[in-house]
Each structure stands twice: as C-alpha cells, then as structure tokens.
Amino acid sequence: MEITFETATTDQHFQQILQLQQQNLYSRLSTEQQGEQGFVFAEHTLDLLKTMASHLPQVIALHQDQVIGYSLAMTAGMKYILPSLIPMFEQFERMDYKGKPLSAYRFMVGGQVCVHPLFRGKGLLEKLYQQSRDRLPAGYELCVTEISTRNPKSLRAHEKMGFELSGSYQDTKELWNVVVWAFK
Image (cartoon, rainbow, N blue to C red):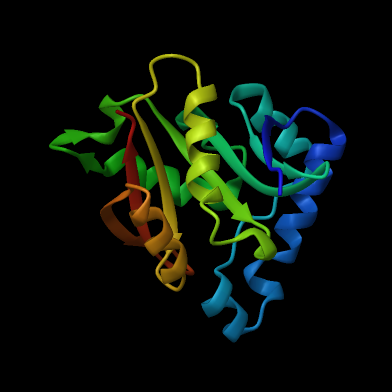
C-alpha cells in the first residue's frame, strides 16, 4: 500500500480535506464512535484552507490520489482567521513551556490532524506531523495544539509521538489539554 505525502495546493486537495473532516466531525459521530475513533471539532472552508496554505504548508497523505490524512498548520499570527479558535490562541499567549513564555518560541499551531479510519494505526499521525515540521520555513522550534479532554485516544497518540502535556484550560464549551512537541 503506497502512501505519499504532499503539500496541499489544489482545489481537489482542499475539497478532499474538507470531505475527510466532515466524516470525522464530533457532531456527526455517535458517542461510541467518538470514543473508538477520536474526532475533530473545527469546520474549515475552502477559502480558509487556502488562506492557511498561503502562510504555512498544509500536509496531506495520499493513497491512490485520494487524501487519507492531513495535518493543518497555522502561525500564531493567524489568531482571528477562525473565531472559534480565539480562546485557544489567547491561552497560548498565557502559557509557559520549559520555564519560558510560549510566546518566546517560534511555534506553529497544529490546526487539526486527521487520518481516515481505514488507515489508522499505521503511524500516519507521526508522519504527517514530521512532514509538516520538515516543510516549515527555518526557525520554527515547536508545534503547539489543543486536544479535547473527551478525546483521550488523540491525546495518547500525540503523547506517543513526543507531544508533552503543557496545561489545560476551559473555554465556554470544552475542557482542553494543551500539548507541545519540541523540534529537535
């Protein structure tokens, strides 16, 4: 089974990201499915994905020309492009990592990562993040993201690949774990 990694650049890539996202949205999965598979929260649009891609690479995993996984990335300066993520960005502005304010580091924000259910358990999460890191402009030191406490499967997968729990916070809807992956 051949899987390749690319930077999303075409409307077809972005449309397939959106299709995979829709299939894995929290609101579309039963409680049982959420516990077994994990889930994603944020809903993007084609224009939003293109905006994100104009700032940082959006990495996709392909099998037979079909997107089977993706890792979306944002800069810390993209705070206002997705209003539902403003609380996350504000929390990042108040956090420390290794004794220094998170803002003292140059970090990418893990905007969302998702792998098609048929391709899970094959190390694609780690490969997607590594591909994202490898395609970043020089100088980035960390990847920071949040994971709902109701998604322990995702937290375990992130910790397995080296993300460290940095803190937690409550927004108006969820309790979130903030995790950090240091680029070595």
